[in-house]
Image 1 (cartoon, rainbow, N blue to C red):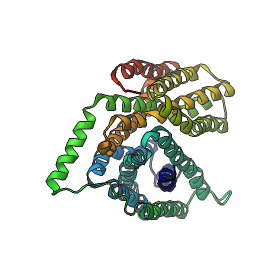
Image 2: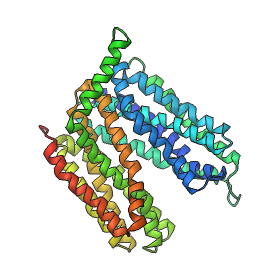
Image 3: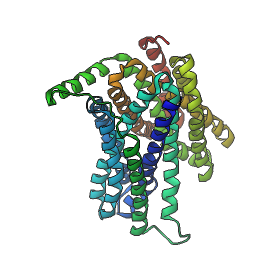
Image 4: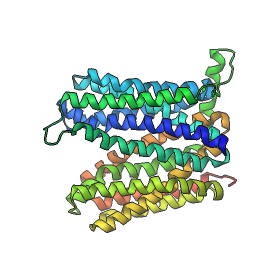
Length: 400
């Protein structure tokens, strides 16, 4: 137990500061900074979303690279980006440079995300579901704290008017210091903990890199299991974008109540994920993923039928619980399926599909809402989850 928990606790601490740094630089600081620079709504949305595009293209090769050169080196590359990039915002004076920096900053999560999960899978052994869930919950807490901290920095002086350039620079300085903290902690705990193998040269390393990618993405079980979380994350993205709007414009709630609806869903996910992960280690991953998809589909489709705050909160709680069922088990199942030497590639594949789902959710929901109402649009996305369930059950065969 001690041999597992000591490096794992350190990894969680590194992940917390890394995600705190990234979240602080993202919301609400980034959209407000883009607005300060004169960007319109479409340009602000592009600035927020451009870093996800980096992850879509680079998470898979980053994970595969860690299988070749080792987790330590690859993870440190991502943490260097976390530590350095926030300070580059200090030089931003126009929107174009902001977009370039946001795209490069996306390298941080693109490289660190799948590799950190692979490191946890390396040390977890038979407890992959539990420890991956704990790790995810800790990083989510870092994400949650980043937003209010950024808002506090921008508005630390009441009634001082709109944030100034100096306020934004202060926020990015704090983000940079949090990133530096994660890097310094990692340099200490990863010392001598490298899983890289000796290669005869670049040719052999390249062959291993390509063969690992081919082996993982050719396994339908990996792709289908990752797609379950990707589809579930599509509804998360749609809910993140449109639940507040629905709550205020249709249900007649105030902005504070709309924020509470999203907050209660996130808190339920954080609290229940480690428990669900432990259950999946003991009783199997597939039942939890299937039940989670069902809970998410039902609660998501029910939201447009509800206008009472407490009923909407109940739907948000059920959705958060369903999300914890899926997310606590899907990454662990992917790690179970893959051979240990390809954990990085597997987590990269998982992260890529995850990002595609999260990025497409608001877009698909927005397109549907442009021509149809909330009920039709939400039912379509819920139906996709329901239709995916038999595909998952038939395709993914595991011993547990």
